[in-house]
Length: 207
Image (cartoon, one colour):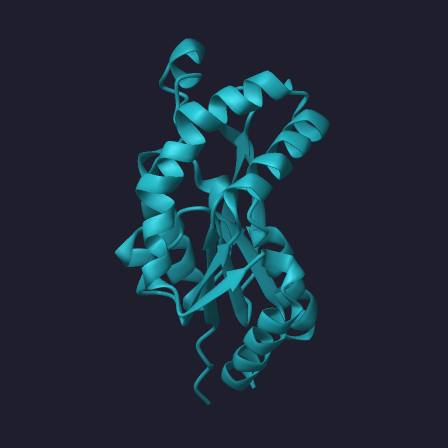
């Protein structure tokens, strides 16, 4: 008997747009089907060959920051119903960590990240492409709150990074990927109607 191909769902959107909330809502509904979340953030390039000072200059909002070759390889491996070892990124040392996360084959693969719709090779692997579209003022407020609370940053440093890198990269690389989406969800996890419709569509594919 032929094994059914896993469903691949891509969820993109700007920083703090609500991608994680949408991802969590979907994964909760399909937990009986075995779901894995593949975070693009875990696939930042290994920078062990660079000095610490050089690593600090990394623009994490640029497509070049991601090791999409490895990400694509891992998705293809999961599509063959084979296990992978998902990398972990060390934000303290600004390079890939030594440890990995074992991931077993699943029915639903959710690929989540700011630029998952930017690479055509990634898009071609996806059955459903989603863009979470949230106003810039909400995203910057959420980012300030998150980075101060969870990452020990100051408001000034978060705002400086937002103006110098996050905002221009969003306008240049992330916002244009909206045109590749099958579904655009305004306001992320707060949009229960859009999420319910999306879940209904996923169910028709999975079941």
